[in-house]
Length: 205
Length: 205
DNA sequence: CCTCTCAGTTTGTGATCACATCCTAAGTCA
DNA sequence: TGACTTAGGATGTGATCACAAACTGAGAGG
Image 1 (cartoon, rainbow over the protein chains, first blue to last red):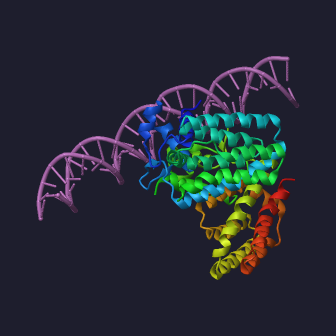
Image 2: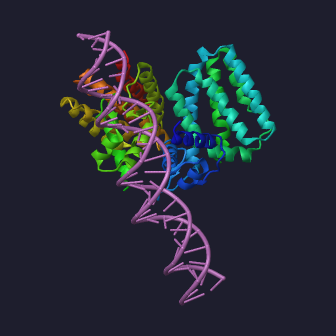
Image 3: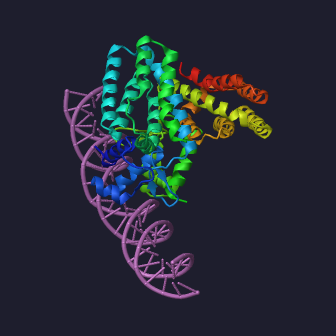
């Protein structure tokens, strides 16, 4: 596989899972050395992430993880709500029992990560929960757009859960599963919207 | 200004305005020669557009304008509806008279382009109409996301316009302006949704 | 007339280099 | 002590090159 693509993928998951702090700087030669490639593929990987909004580019060409303003966080939360409510709604008619079982299994993993106070693990399994549901919507462009929002929020999410110090798994996931079982579309929309905006709202204060 | 950025911008507007046909291929050396730069900035510009979904990357690394399936077109239309209705709704409370005057002036330009059968001019002024309205929403991330949808639809829009052979300016723009004047939010949402999905629906058939 | 083969050409990839700019920190002067 | 200066290092940019893979089209064989 192409070196630039490998580099891109690894950096992307690191960012989405919150393994990088907001404001952390990345250099071409540093990335190149870390992944054993030259500057060229490192540059492509970084510029691609910049294009997706996962990284910011300073006026002098330096690239770093974004430090989001409160306004930006609220806007991204609104985008998550808009897109994910639609995705969940489209997934609902196709959600059979196997999907619900899988969501419950992922939910158990989330609870485990909460207990272990593993922030990265928590973010990873939480996103897995959402992605598993949305995959059923059969809307790849919409899902891709949602993932770029997750990407933009990655470093900030980490900061959020660091200062939140959770002891309970997200209550809204239970509501999502219940609404899926009942085929209750309004309930599902509300549960997804609450889950998405819940944590981010209190970060922006 | 940086060469790769100049190249990127020029290509981007060409694609968004429908100056390239669906399926048209682009090469690094060709782009480089056309814009008077070497392969390096040409590559960065192309990869950035690929990252935004404006161009597709074949398995062998060749890059071309996308040929969208009907399902994909419908999905992108749904995304436009979702995002643009929200943007219009957010712009409504801030829409004062100067904005409405400006929209009416742009609408006159659209009518002119329809009369001249100028497809590229039509697409350009039509997008200008929407962007002018959405700029008032003060939601940069949402607007950026909307523009990447426009970008993905660019070449297809051109094909659409060619087979549509319009003789009248879009009726829904008048409804949008009327709703703005009246401060009628439900009416505005409906008008924007109709305008956005109108043309694209009949393309996917 | 159609299909397969293969050599020539085109194309993307990644490495390296020279250069201009930016950043940093030690040093200097008021 | 504090602000300014400056030299050295670090960093992004763009050009060029070698190489491998993919594509193209002409020609051979059926």
